[in-house]
Image 1 (cartoon, one colour):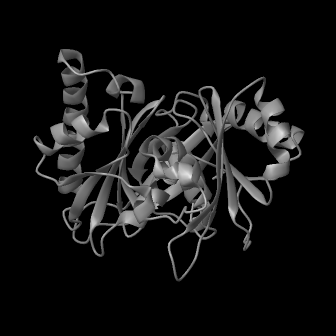
Image 2: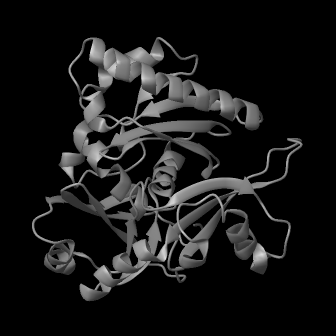
Length: 308
């Protein structure tokens, strides 16, 4: 989202930092076939982030995009302002002034439209994504110091949306649930657009805990969040029929998926990225755990020039 990108036919190269790790990916979008993963590599983060970028610079060609992490931004759903297009961002900035944890005057705000529900009887909605300049500036300077062309900064929800769009059935919506070190992320997409999102306060490590009462308690916490989200989605977007809930594979995911299947009315399946992406040249991605590691980097690299 920040800075604004320029029309370009190049692929995107994503650079995604997580706890102790840096992932890079490049994906080739094709009109006649599944997108092809040209690169996915994951490295332990040794030294500073700048040192890592300098070492990886020979492998990072073209336009780079990176992701903010949970807690570095706020994503709010608000009523779309009924003002001219050039005034929308300022109008939303004023509207969210009391809703963010930092001075909105010292922040960047971008908007993501939520498609209107036919006959919903409520005003159109938008996602407002806000991040303080104190967070964004160091990201931009990091890539500048590494002499890399940072063309965009996105958020995990939009990266996950990009992956989810590959798995939608025709005229059906899709729920996608993923977990990492920052917690869980549940997204709802339809027609390649993000309609709703929810953060789940359960990490990948929490879910990987061996079975027993502890695991059951964690499963139940996630189930309650998923149930509430499904109910809210049905109420707000009754014109969208969800085909299924996909769960990104993590250690212990099979038991978790079986638990969800036994407690949800919605079909639940494990995500297999091979059904939406071509990555024959990168055999490591055949491993479910590596697919979970690569999810956000691949989603960020699926960024399109015509959409946020």
